Image (cartoon, rainbow, N blue to C red; front, side):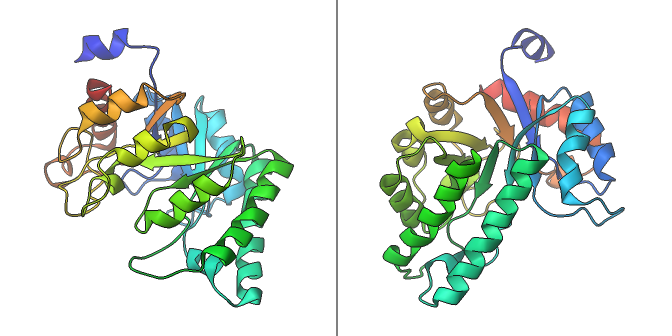
Length: 267
């Protein structure tokens, strides 16, 4: 396995900055670098424990430690407000997202990830959702920030938006675990939207819950997924994974090294 990792230097790997261990932010970033990842994914919020760091400083810390930023994930609370019939509520939520987008861009981000909806089995207003996202995407084009829409429950609404908007700044973020749980598409949405793929969240599960396991531990069909990924322009293979059961006794660096090794073994 070590030999394979050493020789496969063209593959760029990344991981979400929170990987299950309570440590200062910069300490986690340093361990990610030590484990030989190339990229970090961030959540756009202030770090508050065990020490406070304003979100606008996170990207600088990543870069100062010799890593690159893959993307920034925006908070997903209240996303259904973008589809609601109360115009005041919709505008308030749009403005919040635009504010975050500008913060990310000014801090050095080139790409953000966002959810389009929250929850399941809801009837949302397509026309009003179109209007909201049209405004958001215009802002993305104005500030030259790529927006990757992630597959979650109720993917039909994300599918609708990807169909409706043809822009170099609007694309797809593929989450493998979301796609292989509770009867989701099991790779078909990746096939459909591979030409618009901007980012990936790679992890595994048992087919029942979004477990965030290392690739190869569960139900995801990695042969199918990696074959499709090789047909895209994706340049960074990033994970969103945490220790589970037998990995909880691993030290943080041991976990990161094992996670990267498992990922590379599937690519």
